[in-house]
Length: 296
Image (cartoon, rainbow, N blue to C red; front, side, top):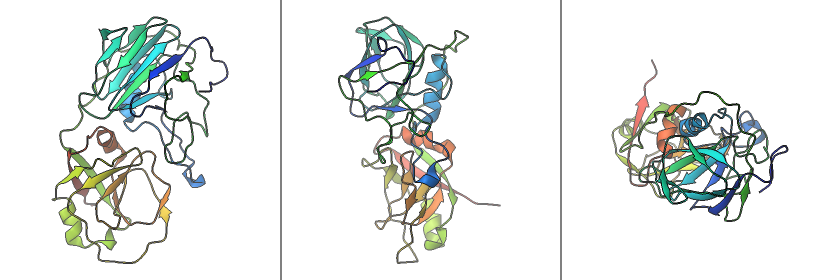
């Protein structure tokens, strides 16, 4: 894996076990949707921000996003790491280490993040940040467009930036637990008129579940189909983070960070960004309920 200019090639992290899906993520690409470029970035942004705070990084630093199965890395030089997001066991050379707190790792030691015991996505930050080259202002891997670094593979060497200036670091950053039930507020529009008012009302009453086919592009659901009152095709139009698209099978899809920038299925509403961190941690089968917001 290539490194950004100014990093020390003798330091960094060696990927020993990449896990089912581990990617480099930061806060994503902002202001480029008009170019057809998705935002990408950490799905649980508060968790990445918390991990960066724990190791003294600024909020823009890139870290690792794991998916269910964790990751194992060997420190090529002494580093400080922190793991947040989905709760999981952390070990350094086989010894238990803290989750949700800064951990000093000596050169040559193996850092292991185990399988998530709850939630889906974990975040590992390293002091100095993962210093792969930025693409369009971000180091994030985008699984839809292919921008940014590829998902981690065994043998990859991850460059680490210069350590941040020493200063006060929090010992703990509180984060909510993964949801037992996912409640997503829904601002109706722009295509709510493609659906019967009764269908919109039922959307707020019927129970759904998070589908196993969910990924970084979208959270898919299983439950009652949302029926249209208008048929035919909709010209492709711009999509935003949190858009709830209703495909022909009537099962709502909530667009997440790697979503396409345009789409042709009607959008019944948009989930506020503040609710999407919980969506990133909802496992398949988690009960899901939409809560339509009525504008005054």
